[in-house]
Length: 401
Ligand SMILES: [Fe+2]
Image (cartoon, rainbow, N blue to C red; front, side, top):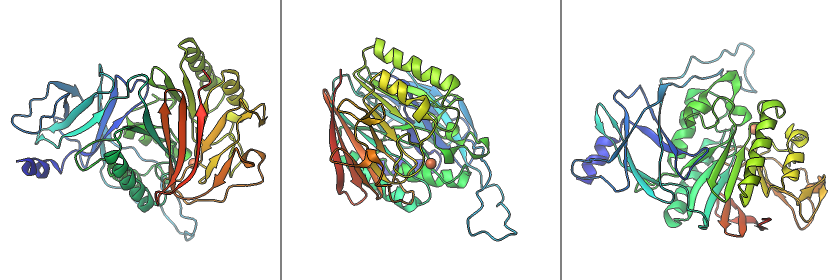
């Protein structure tokens, strides 16, 4: 019977995924794709599995948005001939958004997409952890270009999720695909689908926007993830009452509205006495390879004033952990800048002569990798894991508050 359901369900709703943005303890955006608009789409969910019998799920969520992914221009290859012309628009690829609310933290939800053709495969995910619970978050960025590497890492992650129930979700630091073409995003979303375990456990994703996700003013990032940051692509994610990740957008001005948003968000975290305060964005302010992004001037003074704990960066394509930094020098009470992205993007050599990458309190290297952050009540254990499984760097960060 179970086999019949699996075969029946395989075809229509593709790449079923859970996206977390502002309130992952109580809300989630469920997104799926199709080769066409899936008529009659509705999301069914429940706190108990409904794989057999009438599949009478207790809850239904309507589709609030669906359509053809709007793509940007094709990127001219570096070795293109003079008469290069962009390819014709890639084939049909459609998104469907179903937000769900009023979830209970740390609870397993079983879900299935129903369309005019029937009810599809049942998946499940767990809402964000209860306060004070120890859990892990995977951090990866820059999955573009080498999709085969992204696939392999996602298979590795799937095995980790299967064997370690404390893995709650994945934060992606941006640059999902080389450009905003439907066919390239389809490849990435299919690759991410490989994180889903054999028994249908979904790994929620917290998406940050990168420079490769915006060409042609394409809304493909928003469509793929259900508008996690509205039309500005930045937001504050309160993962638990004690842990906040402010996801910023390095592809628009770091000043103006975004700086005001950041200051307000940090003020709110201070008022709420949020224990762990983290910022995540694509282009680094203490880069391992390139020049600092505008946030170095616009955001770092706020990070230091509000005494945040950790910053997660991508875009450089290397592995980096800076010394703790405050006032542009190494300081015991400084902020560590971690990341730079190795989820498929070709790796570069970090610039080892940069002062913040030197000494016993820093690390710089390269290799296809993701990072693992384990949140225990008073300490974050961090490690950088190569796609071979080897841990190449690790450190711990003690709570400031
Ligand atoms: Fe980038």
